[in-house]
Image (cartoon, rainbow, N blue to C red):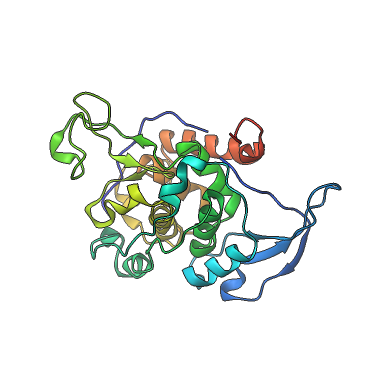
Length: 277
C-alpha cells in the first residue's frame, strides 16, 4: 500500500457497549472473543461478546464467523444517519492493495470484502473480530476519526489530479478543494477500494483494520526507511494505530494521535451521554 499522507484534521469524538466480568472463552478461530455479562446491578442481564487483540501472525477468524458472533449478541444503534451506509456491503479490493507491504500482506488484502450489514457498533465489532484487534480500541479510534459518522470527509486538497472520481474540486462543499479521507475510520482514497470505502461503513472499517493488521504482523518494513521516532517492529498495537494517522512510525504526529485515542479509550467516550445522540 502506498504511504498514507499525514492528516491534519482535528480529532473528532466513539459508541459502544462495554461489558465486564469475563465468563468463558468462545471456542473458535484463534479464540478471538470472550463472553461477558454486565457486573452492575440493574443493567440488562443479557450476555455480550467481547473481541480482543490476537497476537501477530495469529490465524484470523473469517468474516462469516465474526458475523455469526456479532449477530448472536446484536447491539442497538445511536447513529441513525449511518443507516444507508450500514446497509451496504463492500467488495474485494484491487490486486495492488497493500502491495508495498509484500506478498503476505496481500494475502490479508484478499480477505477484505465489507461483507456485513448491521448497526454502527456491530459493524465496528465485526471488524474488530475479523482483524483481531481489541474492540474498545476500534471504538475509541473511530470516535477520534469521525465521532462514528460514516459521512465524515477530511484530508482536503486543492490538487485536482488527486481527487477521487466524481469528487472533483468544489463538489463536496469546499470551493477549490476535494477530500482525500472518507468515512468512519477516515480511509484515504485509493483506487483499489474506491468508492466502497465511502459508500459502505463495513467496507471502510474492513479496509482500515486490514492495514492495521499488516502493520501489526510486521509487514510494513518500509516504515524503517523513513523518518521515525523509533525502529518499526511487529506486535506494537499502538505504533500501528499511530501509523494510520501519520504514515510514519511513532513520529510526533503519530504520538499525538495515539494519545487522543488512548484518552477516549480511558474515558470510554462511546458510553457518555453526549456521544449518544
